[in-house]
Length: 306
Ligand code: 3PG
Image (tube, rainbow, N blue to C red; front, side, top):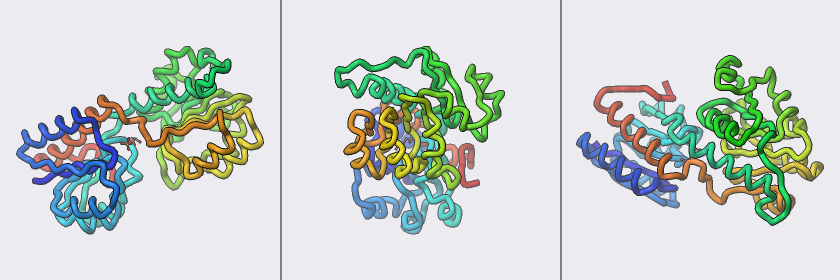
């Protein structure tokens, strides 16, 4: 049984070592394809793979066509918008994610970005504090819950909206649940985005919502760039020089954001929310165990193309 770890953005060594150990104990062989830049390298590597562990690596129909022995793909992380689920199902391949395993890492980075934003990108001028400010968490999944926990430590007033999470669940976490998303944007000084990229959410964060935010508001994105309507956000930020936007996912129009909004826009050069040894170990080892469980016992927990 051959398991391919295909990560264009590699895991920390400690995670790779842990994955290898799990595979060896199961009697499986581990192949590594790290830091690859060409799709052809992935197409070649998947040829004899029975299972693949990936991160944001794109697994499309061409990859499924090339991977004749493939049985399972595990996205070591939360978002699986990089995998063509329709093609996976058509090829009889099980796709899983490892929900929650890197959530704390992403949530901690949200606060790294927020402190950087409210301290004026550390330019030496007087900034503001997070304590006493209202933060709105848009989508209350694993990352959103961790953001809420950390926000309380900062002394923030925490709000959340999630179209699919009942209000009582949000309130049980000690967070104000709002009736509608507009109210949250109207109320909160900071909005932190945690929506998956789906047909429903793509382009949904734009003028309609962000324009409701109070003066000196900060928008922070650690989800997916596709959820933001970049043209609308650019035109709104041109009209409102009080708005700040910080992101762990470089927008398509990043150069334009940089040119127009120096001092109130920042993007990490490469998505690094989940880029900690702890998150790599959590997500990588979970992925490895899920593959062993699937191959040896037929366990389909966390399968996303059921
Ligand atoms: C996720 O969906 O789990 C995060 O966006 C992390 O993605 P990454 O594995 O590419 O860092």
